[in-house]
Image 1 (cartoon, rainbow, N blue to C red):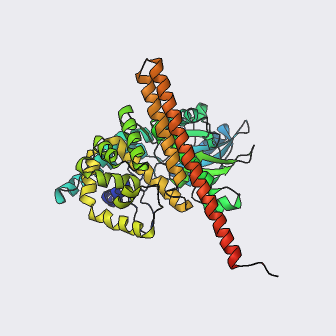
Image 2: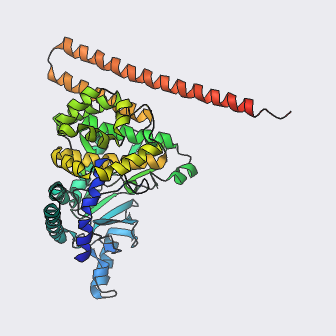
Image 3: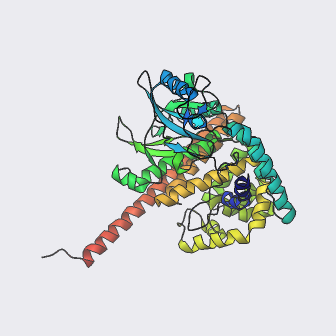
Length: 455
């Protein structure tokens, strides 16, 4: 209990990570899911499947009659079942197994007693947050408790996770670079999820990509396209893209780069009003329309703190936001400024987080995790990522406007406007590429001049 108390107390500091700032040697703080109170349950329990689909061999005396019975029940379901987990986290762990029909599967097993302890954990968290509120009235962190109460039951229901996986696979089926493992419903329950086994390297593992000849920039672009589509177009967002949940590999059939998206327990469904305001805001940020940045930040609950809100959302300084976030990459000086300002503005950050729509909280966290991946790959704040976001915003807003009108003329007008805006984005991207090629040719010519070929 004492260890859980210490863990839960640290949530107040973890809240900084949701603000879009990252601290401590450029490593993003991961608050772990707002909807889940992570309390260090990632111990090496060896889970097995029984006819009731969940127990733990290590909770049964080794060699006992009950132990032997459980082992026999595993063999009724699987040809083989690896006792050593492939990965373990605070709610569950994953084992590799082979079914009798030859399919290799990943078996995600919830830790024993997680369900029973979750309500106690949330209560303890609520007490700690209230204590912080008494000591520091300017800090508002009750939203942490509210989000935990809402999302934890969903994360503990593995059938809900399976439904999310199938929904996002269908939603993004036009992306041939995305792989969502198939769910095997016949052997899945609320506490055990069986899915297709897919191997790969973590998305932040540059060494793995180099060994397997995967293009880092291509992977980063794919990831950006995928999340832009989820956020701006569909409003159904996978909110836990830490590197362990995003794998990369070469497709076995084509050899092309592929992203494997895992762990679908935590999703945020965006309301249409929120999604459209968020589209408008990002369009304003990308194209440096400061009047609309203020307007749509305030529509999303930022009030007079809209400059801080824009900085939190982009993880850029206010000067960079005013100059244009797509104009220049993040510098070491700007990084240092952001980190130092995070502590300075903690009361304002706390106030802002308590006033924005609840949907924004998991979006902040998702943005942070994606930026962490981009930082690890060295592709952060690339112009192509902003242009892909802008394309999705244009499409989303055009689709909404078409739905609002019954006029054929108006719908045609909207379609032409959409096509023109997308053409402008494509032209802008082409100009940037030409400039890049020209710069590269100039640098090559300069090197040839400085280092003439040997006679």
